[in-house]
Image (cartoon, rainbow over all chains, first blue to last red; front, top):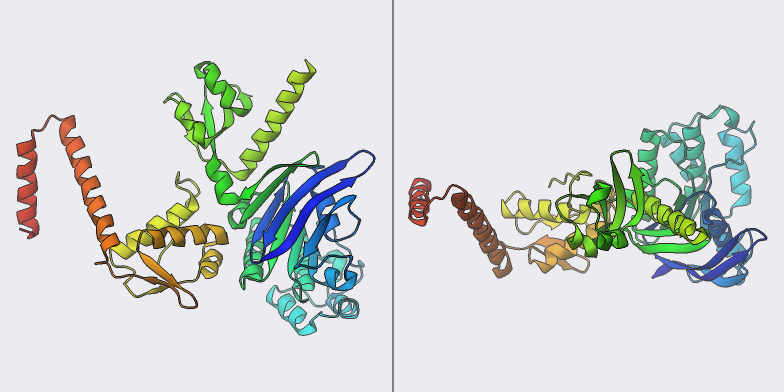
Length: 291
Length: 127
């Protein structure tokens, strides 16, 4: 069963276009939405949250579109961004009160349990919260509601490794019953890579790659070696060559790895490396066209 | 049950999980009839994706190590099961192939190799 369906979604702004974005996220899975800054990640997430309207295409969450029932549609989605919206002088109690008034499914007891579990200070004002505490508070605010889809927009930026590890567990707990899904956007995957089931890679408003993470990782190898060992046939296959002082690094489809001789070092890539080399490849072919 | 995931390993994560579970089933650390943790439980405990653990389990199932029953989870099958026996035979063959390769390196004749093997068999009590 699909929880999130995004079909043929486009959005045109004067100086940016999101073109024909198409993907599904089944119930109980995590998708990483990756790309560099300005690639269109937040635009996509804003469209899913119905903060703005698509120029073309359709979006459904658990079978429901925003046009059918806006209140119910939005209630299904929990959002955590990298900015925080609470008034600076609010304490936990004030925040609890506004959330209860705002969201019909907000469960105050669950909110208290979560904030106690993460040892968020009762009397401290929001402005004095550390970044880690703020992110945890955002999570408590969202997890205390009955949502089906959790959207994280660069939410783990600037978190220390301990807090990041806690967030990973939280996301895995959220999807554990097989009914909830997570869509997170980031420009650096690092540790989040391990828990992602699917990866959607976007650049300049268009899809570059979209697949199950394990499939993507298996489809490519990272090649390192000396430039002079590269035959023309091999050069054809290399994606996004990055030259370094004493050698080069490039990406290649694993199905073409038979072309590699012992002169080269072959490693399994990370998703970040795949993204990096694809963008490098695009920049290079752009330059060639310009020449 | 023990699963240790390495980011340095050349094996993909699902294969690491599969191989470690297989190893523990073969050497008896995980006994037959044991119910393995659910796919989602394992993903959470090991900090990996659900698709990764699903793949590990479906590989183990295809190779005859476990059986997954709706609502009952994944259970370790008896080792005398034909498919698992085949796995063992394959391992034995692979091990012996390595032995022959090593013998070839120093030009050890086949008879000498058989002699070493016979001696070891006697010593181990298998013969």
